Length: 503
Image 1 (spheres, rainbow, N blue to C red):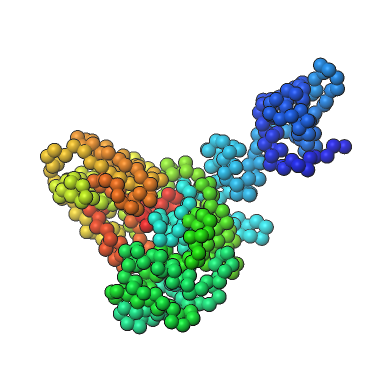
Image 2: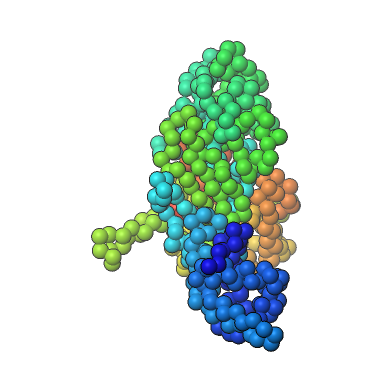
């Protein structure tokens, strides 16, 4: 009786069989060990071991013939396709999406397999949620250039002194259990003891102080003059100017608490360590995996594990709304909502065309929200609606008929990468301006470049999306950004997030 080699891992053996099956085109044949060894680029001895092991697994039959010139018989009992499917299922269960893509090769097939495993499942006593996304989420560092999805994930990994309830917009306690305003320029926060980071260390006041000093250079936090701890688990914050929004401001992602040694920790931006309800287990170009943190100081997360599978190809497929199915299969209803935000154009006064009021007026007129929606394809017309302000209830944008400025032949538009609807909107703008004999040069840059804002451009395309409380969000945003032309807003959708700006 033959025994399978203890040195041959199952995954490696499966790959070898699939390769052998493909080389032989799945056909049984008379051959020799030397010929097969040449096909798999291995030694004659190793080829014999492979065949014996594969035969033990029931994948093939190897009828060896002894003697010069005699050929042995290779009979396939299992197809490479079936084994590939089995291997793919194993990789899916192990959340090894990078290996799955390499194994299957065809992205459409990979997507089909992923979709069949999406949603919430219960496996080995654990609640697992799998979702599909269109781009990697490699940077999760609070205070850096984060888009909306990264911001949402960061809230699961880190904690701050306060937090905002996403459902009702109300301010709640987080690491700080209580706070008070001593004077217009002096706030005091009382912190919980016994809070732990994901790597096991207990949070100390030095971590909190270091985290706030780190963000003191950011405009929204530059009015923090001093941070001290007069007594254990008490934090005093002194300001250069009054700020009634400070408790809300300290609940934002830039103010999340990091371990003071974060800069010395390997790959902290992609594998951060916080005190939040979830810890990062894996973060690659193909997958983000976070797991419930058992030592979280608040209520433990109900979902044990969240897997975000990355498949860039889905970025080109617009989708909006939520499909609701009734008791009968034919009963369907689409539910959608307008997002609290919009796409907008920002004219850059640092360029002579961007600073020209005539150019601004004319561009705002020809690229009006109504025009852009009118020239969009039908699939986008179902999702986009003209916007007349930053929020659905606002009507501050006014389109006035204007004449084209003399000598205007070209304009430059810039937006950040990995947002398919930016490309679509830019294409519509290019088409409309071309009909007026104006060439639109389009620049697609990285999000870091976008955040720095040093690229020369007449117009910037972006989107703003606000969460509760709206009066706080809008007051902070409008203080930093003056929108020259509101474009349109879209219905809420899971992927990719339209009408949303992640700062």
